[in-house]
Length: 132
Image: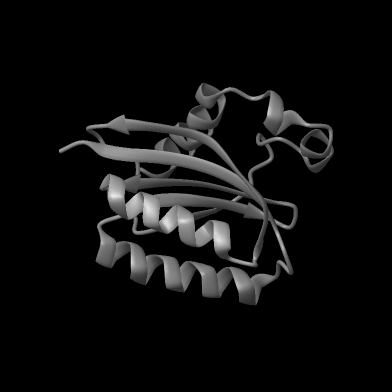
């Protein structure tokens, strides 16, 4: 079965632990029902998320994120078809942005816009490797 993997970035609006907890609770419930898995890397200045699942379900979820006022500057970073899930055991794995990820200053200076789809995929491959 062909799956879609999609990575987007956005800036949080009103980020705090309560908002993050609500996002994760909702994502885990909704994603499990839609057969979507993935990972959310988050910090005060950045959301970086990988979603994977049936193409229609991932498209619906991404459309909802585009309309969600907790996200600013939602930008599609990568989308492709795959046969394998990277986060198959996680309705939504959350990961605080690690020190090896782009710094706030690097993000402010446009690092995400210079990154390739492979750079974004490598971030999530690293998180997936650490999860096992």
